[in-house]
Length: 482
Image (cartoon, rainbow, N blue to C red):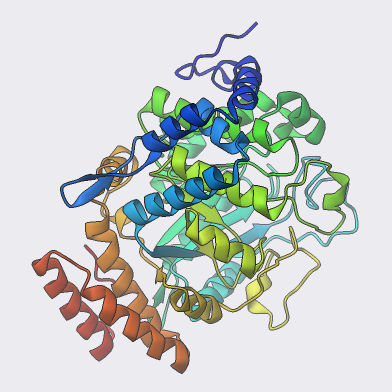
């Protein structure tokens, strides 16, 4: 029987079922233990260190106790601390991105995804390089600077060479004042050699959802295809890091398995990356099962309520304070609004989950991976964020300045990253306002920028930011960054 070892490279040891079950038992036994809960909450609180805040984070057992706790005043305290941590590390900045679906050809049999091989009535499509270029121009015309590319697993139709060619095409497109400055990649688990190729292509974060950490369920949910190999899939991040990719993104698809099990497994995976590689996950995504072409979410009996979803997000923020938490347009405006306060730091905007979806006026549904609940335009999302006290950020500076992996983590964990991120967010927002925003959004945006510039405490940084924003407004000069 496998023994729990977070530093091991054996997935049955670092995602150890015995440890998860013991954790859930411990959490259930202590969910009303006020003294323990208070001590965990105290550990999670941000601590001021000079001009910055630092956080210790929580291990999977401590965080699981908080998730199990249903004492109303303690749950409110969890939410309050989550908001404090989000402000300490990320301030009121919200990074904006869009998914770009390259191909829905797939050889896997995943029972929750409409791209599965046995779905014979979904339209199959793969973008040509000219179509990729057209999609990128459409996204640039919206104002996007950061993409997450998606493709089904199909060695024949979507080989690594195709993905690399698409990345090169995306980076090559310069349209008016637009440019995609960072491409994150969400493709199937692959080899160390292929991860090296992705690194050389200049990707940002490599993202791969585990879907479920419950091995027995995983094998049933992925009955056929290369994704059926639980061990290979679960160790993908280890191979990515061996291949030189130091920013990786985790995630589970909540609703496939019992959420407390998934939550513990997710945090154990984060702890494993820290223990084995010295760098935790750059991002953690929190998707839920949604309706799609031939997928009925009601067929999965582990769905979670909005209240539970909010609590999961807040507890992730307490446990892994440095990570970027991503919520997509799978969720409604109301849900996204609540979770933004509880720790989410990245959102998609104006998203389409179909292959070739950005170049058509009407939203296509024949190749969608899932229903999009938040169908607002990017401009509407940007204004909504600002109206709710957030700064929409199109910044990609850290990737391009080499602040990745342990370099990013050291700045983030020490609370110093705000010195770069805050002015960068304001400068990239100014770019958006000048080049893409509606008149109403532009008016709101410059009021936000004026207010936020005053919050920059470093006089020299403030002076440079003010001058750069003036240059952005007066000319076509773009891409200033700290």
